[in-house]
Image 1 (spheres, one colour):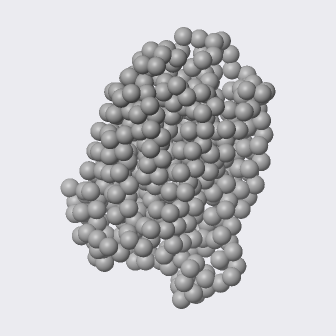
Image 2 (cartoon, rainbow, N blue to C red; image 1 turned 30 degrees about the horizontal axis):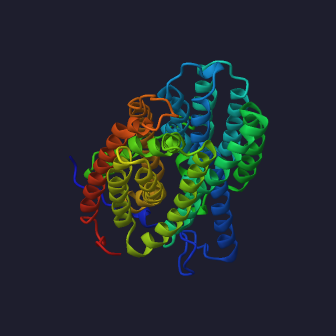
Image 3 (tube, rainbow, N blue to C red; image 1 turned 90 degrees about the vertical axis):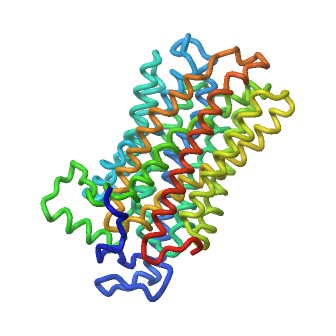
Length: 460
């Protein structure tokens, strides 16, 4: 393996693209700390937040559909939980598997153009799913197509926003990615109520119309920071294909730093969505009502949203890598110490453990998602961010596609009205805990490698 790559090997790694400090200037001599730039940065954060709230929030609320589809006949007759889970898994995995293309197209065709395309695909996916008559229709529309649309809304949000901040990058991205939690908080009870009142097909049509408006309007605001825009124009002028994503720098990919980041990211992604998608189903196995199950999803997303902002702020003060490691380790401990025991204890104790787990897991596991892009900028530099970001998100997407349905397949249907149904989640909770513990090992490795970089300390 090559030695760790310093983000300072290229002089462009130290481009000042922050808007917080009035002393920071661009290479063209423009003061990007001026009021218009500050206002633009705030608008970018609001727009990116809305994109994650809408596209990712609907994906994160799929647990409502998971629980509903498991109890419906028609297209879902005789379908196992793992087969239904494939719908949601495709949505979140393709959201990141397509990241290299999403990043490249965002640079070549502008964030606005790509986000508007995402809005059209996302809305079409929900609309087509509303007419589905077989399970594969939903897998194709609400899974595959929705994932593609989510990718073209999510990737511009997480690729463009970091470039407008430096000192407060952790807080900014915490706010942006808290949209996934806020969106899930709003969407979960709303979808549950709409499904009960107008049916899930009309709910999908309503989601199509509203999501198109929110994503399209937000996309209209998205814009690269002037420094990044100039660099993108330079790359495009070299004759690079506008369709095919650029290859990541081979020296970066061969570094131990990249290997450590990829190792932790893959294991974390393989585990992350299993609790998110099966919260409502597991709550039913503990004797909670369907409404309470949807409320658990909302609570999970709400605590995740707040956690991302708080952890982002703390990470800016005490080190983003430090918080990435701590949060990953805590999410693993919470799974093994709370969720796993809740599957084999009394119903009363199991409920208490589960509530505690939902809160702790949502805060810690969700924080990984918000810290992930900020750590990439810190370790690999601005000049490598887009290509490394796309490649690592793709790795996370494939890990999600493998880990989530595989773990879900361990769930055996014991009859959701049976008070012993919670036992079906014993093996999945153990697998999730082990995967997250492996991710914590990867984060520890990454933290050790980062210490070899100039200027890196344990405490910022």
